Length: 232
Image (cartoon, rainbow, N blue to C red; front, side):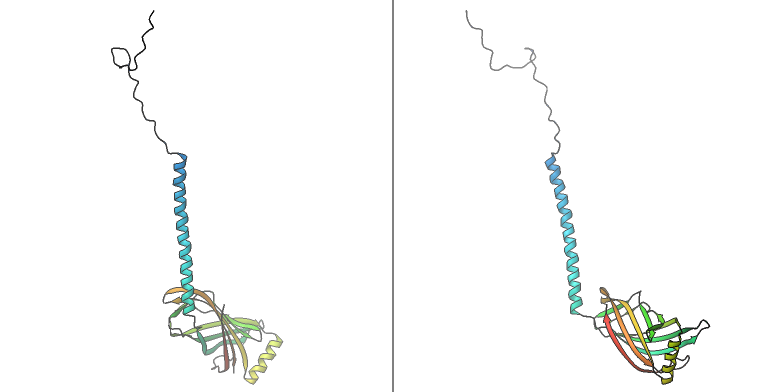
């Protein structure tokens, strides 16, 4: 008995033999992998870090440039001098307090050739007699260009307890025609190169002076004065 025939290696698929080709396969949609998403996130993070680094180095560079300019063109501290000293009121009130009103005109000179000054809010001016503040005021805001002179009117007002010791000391000084006073000025100033702000400083001026009188409507003579300057 002969063996059954082997099946053919290749079969033609057609409608006649009942065999049909399998339906066409579709390619499944391809979704981005986790590795792709992670790579995109790292790229954004690197960009943000790069921008922050650039900003940081820019701030450092501007600060260094400002310091170099400030060190190169150091501030010539403005020079001040009292030009006029007028007493508007200096009398004892019914409550035994001393009422003082004085107008002081100060000559402010900016000697710098390159630096201009912007006087800001927050200044204070006090006038003291034997360690007591008898009146106070402030410097108004103003701009002073380089190599210029300004005259500043500073009105001072105040009330002081008129104790017996204070009265005796003042009477003795009036009799001698030598009344010692101390004026303390603190003024915040923005230092500018042209109109570019460089730094804010506080100028501190102590003016020790001796006047011959504190009487109202009388020309006050300044016998002597000395000025001490500093930056805070």
